[in-house]
Image 1: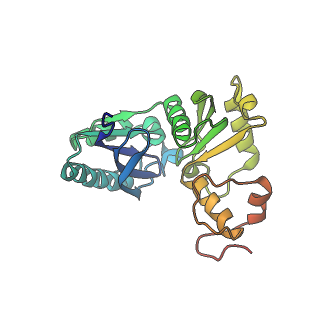
Image 2: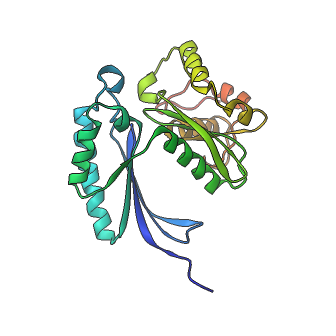
Amino acid sequence: MSDRRFQPVGIIDIGSNSVRFVAYGGAPRVPTNLFNEKITAALGKGLAKNGALDEVAVARTLEALARYRRLAREMGLKKIHTVATAAVREASNGPAFLKQVTALGLKPRLLSGAEEAELAGLGVISAIPRANGVVADLGGGSLELVGVARDAAGEGVSLPLGVLRIGAEPDRKALRNQIAEGLQGTRLGSAARGHSLYLVGGSFRALGQLDLRSSGHPLPIVHQHVLRPSGSRRSGPWSPGRAPPN
């Protein structure tokens, strides 16, 4: 039997809120997580106000990327895939930032909104074979929605509704209207009807962790945890600095 293992590879994800470096190795279907580190850079913090990446956040991000590049070299990684998403894509100083990233010895690829949505869908399919419904990936700068069925990702959309943009107390009516407008002309509504909604991203993970704690779940594992609408309403208001509701 042939050895289907692959050479370790590094992936750097420059998000609108966090920047993550992961190294994988082992079997292609079930790769082993060799290293995983992230920082909260908040690149997209000032995007809604002035349309540019925050200067302090840029400096913080470049410092982290230089460290990740050194770590990858020490690990002997032959391939490093670096991707950037919504904040860099939409910022007026995004191209200049990418040049700075390139100067560090990395080769950043700027993903389109459709590519972000597709990759989110493929990630869910990889973890949950035969997933059927809609994937929602909530980041700092955008919300990606994509239909998944029969081990394939369908059409997807990217909406400018990331957590850094909408703030702590968003206008719910305005949000609903933006989502409705973004879904016009798509088949995502029919893809979701009667099927599952797969939640991806740190904000959704926090929601899952809240539900685990408030329900007294015996296992603190949020991956593939199922949220019920009644359960999420039961959780009520809570912050990490306080004890969860009973």
